[in-house]
Image (cartoon, rainbow, N blue to C red; front, side, top):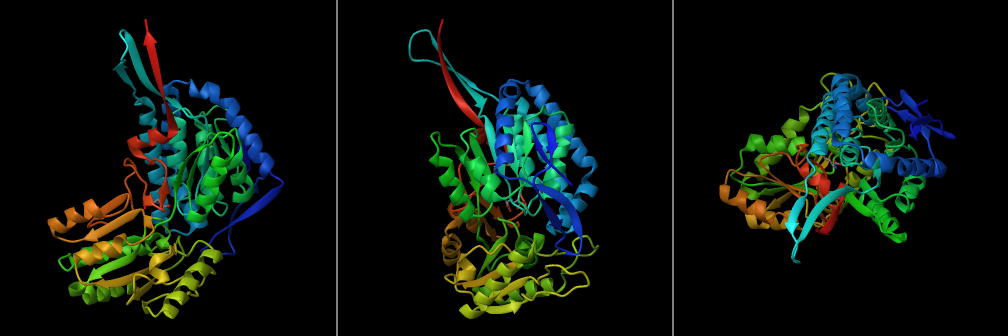
Length: 478
Ligand code: UN1
């Protein structure tokens, strides 16, 4: 049984949860503690108690711990990638790649611990000097999703720790294995007790405590809009409002113009929409395609989909692993049904697959003749389902791309500098990609969206410091 880490001690919980492999539901990946409210409260106290010393620790000390953990992740990336793919269902290369990314995030953030800067500014009174410095926030609650079981926790926790905060971490319930491994590695890398606490358990219990407890100063969350909204309400309801960083949904467009390189556009579309089983908030789920290339694009995407193998995540040759669990599979299937009822044409796939191992397998689904007001073109599905909407020209493409409540990533395939430049300026999204898939991001760059997709400062890269520190303005007359 894998326990929770509270105040430097591995603890059992009153309940245990089974971590099941979505590629083969007969396989138990492991048993994990399922903590409750009391565990979360103890973890918050431990994180509070650890904060004074950790926040005053040297940047070198924090750097070395993160760097050591990065090294261990890199050394064990095959083994941990296997664990990740076993619990989440992304393919083995995707799983190993994600562990490598977590390692890179940790070494990048180790460096950021050394690079915190401030300003010295002349005050307006004679002889007054002003220093503007950054201080750690305090205790940060990290609430992470199931689709990137190690990379997202790594980029939140590493930034929190690098800048001197202590952490209570609540991973998504269905992928506790990668979270546990990450915490174990950081713990053994030398974190003092209570600096990083792990409480596996439900959102309503453990998450509920973190978001309402007066001992927590900030919440960094990635997940659905509905959960984000509940978290936001909890975070502002106490006597002191918590700082929040909420990364939520997307309904990301990929525009394909007549002048696009067709092969490249197909690659961007298929990569962006279907790899990782479409389970990324940055996935392109809406292809918006101009008339002159539309039919060729649809034919070529279908040809490419025909060549993709849906299968067991650990099997060599699998391109698309299973959906993460039965609940998500049912959501995907219900949207496929909705699309058909709305009058869109299911041009390819969309059927559950019976494979030798019992798992949640689904053929990637492509809908054509999709009107941009249909539910399948407006609501986030979070599965391997994409829609094609035909448009007359660039102007219509841009306006359809922006006509969504979301604003995370937005892509265009074109060889026209004029259109690419105009799109970069006018896409209402936090991330714009030209001739690249909307998903797949660099770990050293700021990440976040606009509109309903995000709330609060950016994550990752140099900009992460804005969320994880508070600014102090000190006036001195000597
Ligand atoms: C990526 O596309 O590489 O949950 C990262 C998500 C995002 C991260 C996407 N927060 O899908």
